[in-house]
Every structure is written in structure tokens, then in C-alpha cells.
Image (cartoon, rainbow, N blue to C red; front, side, top):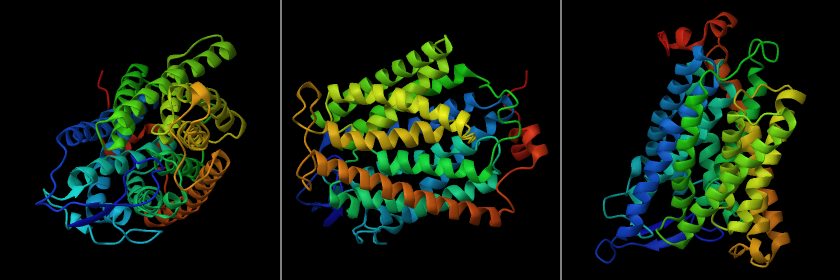
Length: 434
């Protein structure tokens, strides 16, 4: 049986690799399979409950259930869409732009079918968890004001029209991968797509009622810190699992992930301490997420020294972008998805082209893509990947929001419903009965 599939783990994460896996001649590697089983659970743990609690604590108490519900519902609908057609269009051979329909409903994938030396069913499930968390990240941009029906339709359409094609371009044998784009675990595929979609959604929906005139502090920072801790732990599966093997690549990806998270946390906290005279809990956990998102595309290509620099830059750059988006541009990206995930993904994708270099002494990485000849060419490919992903995501997201608005007679809840809160008006339930 011949299976064409792309391994994110291979340096370059670029071209589709062909694996021969006759059931009678090959068996899955037990260690690699066990690790990816664990990593898959960790990535799902990032969304449920990690991201759900992280976001849930940041909104007002009258909207806590709506955020939890949105993340949970997206996990369900993304899973079914991935089964029906998403995986096939992402990873089946197809062409440079999109996969084909050969794996619709996981056709041709059995217990003995391999992707490399792990079961293809496991590879498909691992990738499913990425498809779950990406649209869930966007929830943070329109929290507290989008209709539940609009959220469901938009998330489903967005997964198929944005996530799936970009996934194929980078990891499924598409044109960005063939150019040599370095994206180990989702700088373009996950963070830039989600971040840009969040920015567009915030602009299209407009500001929440009372934005910058009424205080909207997080209602439960304990919940947010709990969710942040779950994200940090889960990210080891996100990045380390993307090696698709229990080996040195996975170990180094986990190490640099941890270093970047710690550096991003302390950088953000320090800037706040200097600027506002107090180190905030919200700041240190947001800096952690910035560090994690920024190292993601580079995690399989850089060393510990490079990860330290990437994490520090993530904390600084994402902090000032958050201030610019909210205070200068007055864009109500409710939970800072674009300045943290979008900007972090852009920064990390570009820096991967620098710190992958094996000639930077203690800051050296593991080498450039086989498709390029040096740092200049690698950074140029990274830049093109960022621009193409940014523009495509922005345009398609805008169109999908407008289409969704027509289908649901408007994207937003009414002003009265927003003031009452989405928990009651959308779900007739309350998060707390005290």
C-alpha cells in the first residue's frame, strides 16, 4: 500500500514524503506510536480544558459559559469535518493547492495503514487536534458579542476554506512546503491564520458595548492561570509531537518550547513592572502564551540559545502590539488573539529563518531547508509564507464573515442581549449561582 503524506518533523517540513507501508512487511514503531498517542491527548488537552479555561476566566462572569460552550462546540464540529473531508483535502496527494478526496471519511485508512512508522489513523487524529484548536483560538477575538449560530457556521466554513488549504500548502505537499518554508508545528498554519482571522473578525463585528469607557476586567484570574498552566503543559505535545517520533528532534523541540515560554513570561512581566509599577499575573501568563506561539514554527529547527532570544523578543514585541491594538488603533480584539498569536506566529516564522542557521555559535540551529542555499534565501521564503498566509486568510475570513452574517441575519447579538450576557441570552444558563 502506498501512502503519500507529509511529515512535519523532517527538517524543512517542506515536500510531501512518500512512505511505503505494506501491511505484511511493515509494523508501527512502538515507541513512536506511544509518544504520538500521548502528544495527541496533550494537544486536545490544550483546547479542552486549557484554552477554554484560559479564555473563560478573561471574560466577564455573565459570558463564561458562552466561551466554554464555543470551544467545546468547535471541538465537536471540527472533528467531524476533519473526518468527512478536512483530512483528505489537507494531506491526500492532490496538487500544489489542495488535496484530493481519496481519504473522505478516512477511506483507505485501516488499523494496519501506516504514515511513516506510526498508524495513519493516529497521524490523522493528531492532526485533527490541530484543526480543533485553530478555530477555537479565534473565539477570543469576538468573545462576548457574536451569536452562537454565527460562531458555529463561521467556524465550520473557516476550517474548510482557510485552515485546510493552508495546511496543505505547508504540510501536505503544497507549494509553500516545496519552496522550503520552515514551519515545524504551526506558525503559519495555526497562529497566523487564527491571528489574522481574529483581527478581521474584531474589525467586522466592531467594539463591545462600553469598550474603553466601561471597565471589563477578567472575572476569574484563578481560572485563567489554571488554563495557562494547562496550555504550557499541552504545548509539549503540540511542538514535541510534531517530530512524529520519540527521538532527539522531539526532545529538542520540547526543550526550546519550555525556554521560550519562560523567557516570554519574564519579558512581558518585566515590561509591565517598569511601565505600570506592578508585575501582573495576567501579564506573566500572556507572555507565556506569546513565547509559546512564537517558538512554535521554529521549535524543530532552532537550539536553546535561539529559543531564548525568540522568547524574549516574543514577550517584548507582543506586549507592545497588544498596547497598540487596544489603545492606539482601538480595535476590540477581546482577548488579544492577533497581537499574541498572530504577531507571535509572524515573528516566530521569520526568526526560524535566522536561528535555524548552524553558523551562529551558541545561538545556532539545525540547518536550513534543503530547498534553500542560505539564511537570506531562507528568510525570504519565510517572509513570502507569512505574506501569502496573511493576505489569503484576511480576504477569505472577511468574505466568510459577510456570508455568515447573511445566513444568520447578522453576526452580533443585540445590545440588550450583550448587556444581559450571552450565558442567559444564548443558552439560558448561568456560570455561577452564588
